[in-house]
Structure formats: structure tokens, C-alpha cells
Length: 386
Ligand code: GLA
Picture 1 (spheres, rainbow, N blue to C red):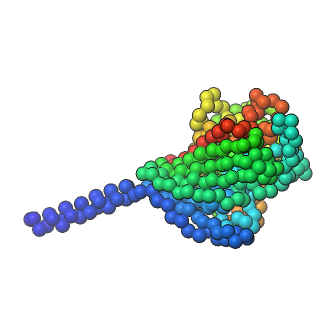
Picture 2 (spheres, rainbow, N blue to C red):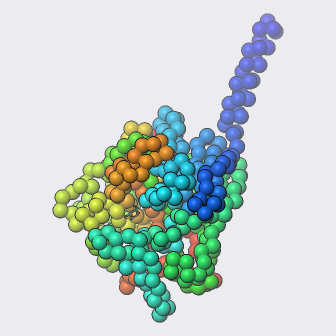
Picture 3 (cartoon, rainbow, N blue to C red):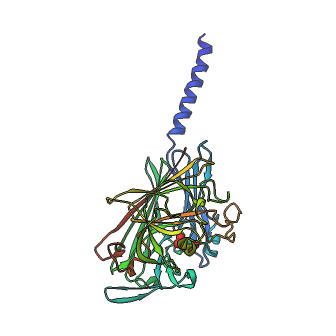
């Protein structure tokens, strides 16, 4: 009797220990080489694994999130972020896949602004409708610089602190801007991004992350079946150059009404809609329906085939929804699959486009950071499945 019970008990104990170890897996960080920049500097890839075995990878080049590996409703892991497998491909060019965006996320009209009576000129790197503007920080924005990275681990998360000092006059912007972006990947499959900055001269500052998502898996095809909810009942409507006209316009009764869940593709090609025409689809800043400061649930995206869900919480007043209208297959992703038209979408939390030039300061909250002030804002991307 004794002899038969003992091995059985041992077996049970062993499986209990294995289960405990699996569940108690500590978050970890693995660092590998990500290739060399044209000037000889080497880059790294930091892979953060949480206690559930989900992962994100981040490179110090541009602070780019290159991979987001999260479970579907069956628990199967899949990569939901568009991106590349080495730094050389990012250097060769890409539409801001996964990158930190700054000093100014989104557009500044004609690449010009006036601050405290002084005129500033920025590099114009974008011209929708043939109208030049400065987009996402200019020629060498924060998406193309090398960040100093300090990894950290807690029992609840793996994280990276990224720091970059943007020099006075860089890309035409005034002041030395000292920026810290902290990525925290929690055991609950949340990517928390904390942005922090100080300056020694007044400067515009509007930081974001430009991840492109495909919750069915990167390279798996269209994102038009994803179901989007945006807690935003107004839009900062734009002109042909994608610069806000200054008005907040209600989305009710338009293809921009995502206050209830809608498939991205359901109304994206609505004929005769001027805003869709200007953007070539959705490429617009939504005014979030927040009533209080703090974290606000801005968006939820559901992918019906895999059941994956992404929620976005932010302290920002706006979110740019861009449905990959400029993707045309020239960017070959990390799985060697071309990223074609509308196979990824971005939801960029932010202050409103062109705020430094907008007259109505009530409708376009200030994006000016002054010496002695602290720029501090948080956005969370939370992944789950149902
Ligand atoms: C932002 C802009 C888009 C486009 C993408 C990058 O989201 O709003 O118009 O430029 O970046 O292609």
C-alpha cells in the first residue's frame, strides 16, 4: 500500500510545484544586439517578458517597440505590432512604426510657430494635399535618435527607462529638452508609458508613441474588421493639409462616430465625406469626452477572429486615429510580409495637432512647456481577449 501511494503523492506534489513555478515566473529582461547604425554606434533590443509569458521588445533606436506578443482567446501568443527584425531596416525608412514621437507629435502648419514674440522655423517633412508641414518632430525626430536605456524589474513588471537630451535648437525647437520615457510591461499585459520632460527655454512639447497594431497578428492582412470604440464625440476637423481648422465638430451622424462599436472598415470609404477624402480614410484627432483630469479610457479595439482586445487609457485630451492609409506594401515586415494598404492602425494619444498656432486656446489646450515646469503624462495600452 505504502509503496504505491508514495509515487502517486510525489507525482501530485511535483505537478503542484511545476504549476506554482509557472505561475510565479518572475518578469525578466533579455538584451541582444539589434545591429549597427551607419555612424557605427551599436543598438540593442530589450525583450521584456512578464509572468504570463507575454513579451514586448524595444530598441534604444527611436525607443521603438518592435514586438508585442500577447495571447488570443485560446491563450495562443501572437505578435500584434508592425515592425522590423533589425535596426538597418528601421534606418532605411518606415512610417514611424512603434516609435517615440517628439518633440511635437502630429503636424505644425507650414513648419512655423511664434512663441513669446519670437518666430521659429522647423523642417517641413510632410505635405498632404501638396501643403507642407512639420510632422512628428521634423527631419530627425525622437523616432530616429539613440536613447539611453536603464532596465528595471519589479515583481509585477519588467520595464525600461529611456532618456534623451534634445539640444537647444535641435530641429529648430528652442531649449534643451530633457526627456524620459518609461515603458512598464506589467503582469496584466499592460504597456504603461510614462512621459516626463523639463526644459531650460519655453518650447512646444507633445510626446506620443506611434505603434501600429494588427490584433489578428502583424502581416495577417486587413485591419478593417477590427471593431473600434472611441470615447470621443468630437473631432478637430482638418483642411486639405490635415491641419485643424480650429473647430471641434460633433461626430454624430458621420463616419467618425465610434462612440458605439463599429468595424473600422464599415464606413471608411463613405463617398462624399470631405474629412475622409482629406485623410485618405481615418487620419484624424478625436477630442476625448473626459470631464476630469487623470487616466481616461479613450479607446477599445476588438478583433473578432482572435478575440484580442486592446484598451487605451490616457491622461491626454486627444487621440489620433490613423488606419494605415499610406501603407502600400513597400515596408516588408519582420515576417517578410509586405505591409499593404490598411493592414495596421495607430491610435496616438496626444494634445491636438498644430496647437502652437491655434488661436482658440480654450479649444486647443497649451502644448508649451516652460522652465521650472514638469511635462508629465501617462498612457496605458492594455491587452486581453474575450
Ligand atoms: C501620422 C499621420 C499620418 C501619417 C502617419 C505616418 O499618424 O497623422 O498622416 O503621416 O503618421 O505615415
